[in-house]
Length: 339
Image (cartoon, rainbow, N blue to C red; front, side, top):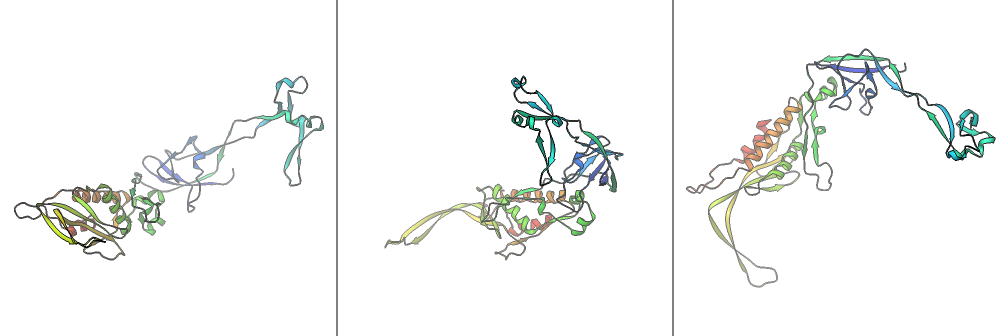
């Protein structure tokens, strides 16, 4: 029966999740080519794990059988009055070992000069079902195994490369002990974290793509610092005057500018390890009990953040103040409150 197929399984209310991949991450599973009580296993969300509905009593696979009835037939039927239409292989020649111990077919002298006129054909045999020796080890039982979330966010690539424009689940950090204890099929259900730098990258790209330029603008957009300010229309626009001397001219010119809005900083963030810029807030790592919760926390924060940034405000005509008061620190700290 050959080698014993070792299968690890996790029992659930719906059936068994099975795998033959263990420590070797490059191992290609053999389960796709096996039959479990005559039925093929089903794919799952994890590339190394498959699903079967019942505890298997027999594991087997189909094995290809060698072709039979090897023969040579004439390529041109019109020559059958001069040459045999068909030659059995053993009548046409025999296999002989060459100097490299490889078998080479040698035609008999009487047919050797006609060999280019013939082509070799054979008949395939139906595949044969072969039973496999196997060990089925149930690790533990769970009620249900839910798939991980589709964790994928756009980010701005590094200034000198166009690679890595998305951040996916490979950036999610799990505890080393959980990686040892739990099978990778269940790792997304364990506590996890997204680093401060990765959260910063997601916020930066998300705000850049969704900001309403009519009510807010990005005032700092770097890999280490990101800031956004409100554009607040003022009740009574005013005109400013400034003088400057153009290059290559003797006379000083006067420039007039109408001021119709003012800026109010609403977001000012850096990630851990970066120096502070003004009243910048350090983005804290995002921590959750599992990957689904991690994505929910991140999506909720991004939704609330862009809603605050894109909310239009204006000056109060009575006191010439801001009708809605925004506290930049409050917006910045909202990240840490969500975590």
